[in-house]
Length: 317
Ligand SMILES: [Zn+2]
Image 1 (cartoon, rainbow, N blue to C red):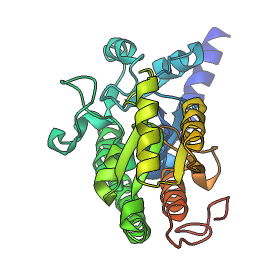
Image 2 (tube, rainbow, N blue to C red):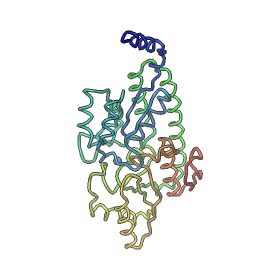
Image 3 (cartoon, helix red, strand yellow):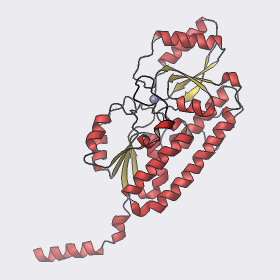
């Protein structure tokens, strides 16, 4: 009897095609939606990607949940951003490195391309996804990590990466076109926190955040007073709220300007540190930036296509 079931088990194992093992998707866990999207674009059906941070989630404040920990300890590859973005998770990842393959993909970007952090001399501004040109470098790091985890799929990953980079280049060209159509003295971006530095540097916009580079710093009343004066002096009429940051201080700014007889409106909601709802266009990296570029250019005075670069944005302008 024992012998029979042993033989049956052997027969079953032999009947399993070898390819079934090779083709099981690589289990990838990524912290931000932007990194998860890159892994999906590059990995295609060779990967099964779980993104930890959904719409509206602030990565500066996020801590891993029990479910996240289970997913990460079972993953073949864990991708995080690094550059001190996931400030509350650093220790966890350094610990996990001893057990799993863990890659901080933004740490692979050439440091000479990074902006300094305003609070820490030895750190950098982590918001590199805001510049399509810099995000290319991160996408290549994701390709590298996937290829090391599954070398036999190198060709597929390389082809998918090229196609994704071409889309990113198209996005950058669209950004240059509509953002430079904004009158020069309107090229000022007032936002809740300083997430748009790379965006500003790429497209020639001055960026004024109420809070600093991390959402964890307090917005002082002095800073709000300063910004109210700037809005009034320069006759700026639009400010922007962010999907992952409370709009409380933004309302204080609008009220402050109104008290000085200057009308300021909310130019729209931008995706700063998290993408839109999964399954929608805004829930992809390209859609997220198309939304931001189109909303900013439109609110500051340029003619923009009603539904953005790919005619896929959910809200018209
Ligand atoms: Zn941020």
